[in-house]
Image (cartoon, rainbow, N blue to C red; front, side):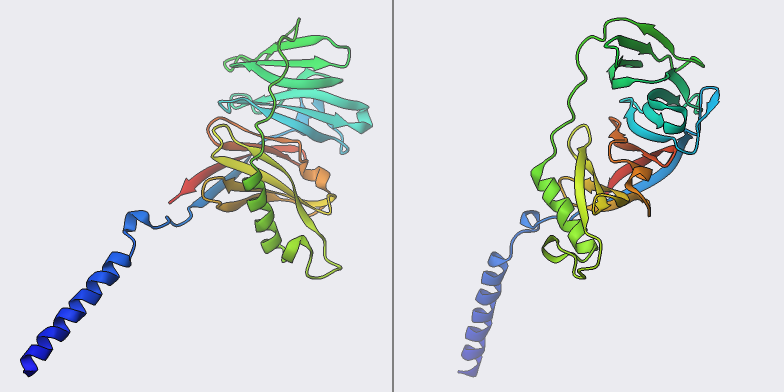
Length: 267
């Protein structure tokens, strides 16, 4: 009689364990853990000297235009002391010292073909710069600008919300408001999507005027990693002076230098 009770209890226990195993989701059905991002930054070139001229202390980089393969980076700059509002220069891996392409009044810049840079000026003239990576100097020729520059990829709204949530958590801003009323308010002001859409970089400033920072975002996993930051005026790392290469390198200007960040996902 006791042996029969023992057998029934063992059978009941086996049934309960079987039911529990059936309710447990298979490993393949579980959510994969969020990945991580690895970011490695390095200064690529100084823009203090452009061509044969040394820029003044008032100079700053306005925008950067990295070539898709990352070999060359064009950038516009201003030098108020020299009355330059928008000059155009280029730096290449072979010749890191920036070369001057156009002295001033540049209005739009884009890569129209491999190693071919096109830009327009305030006069309305279109100019094509053929950038030979094997030459010491870039050849510039005036002519029709051709098609308009391509538009930036649209920012994903979910990625923007993830970036904002990260900043609010990092800066202790519950509900998007500083916990301390006297504290600065940090906001995501732009998000730049890399070719392919898997990565993005978002720009953050304090009250839109100071302490600029760039962060990398894995759009799929939501992982975030810092790229760089500056304590000071936002102009020292301008929002518009940044762009992606085709292989996941983020190029940006900080103070009067061009920097490059390699962004890679990790399991």
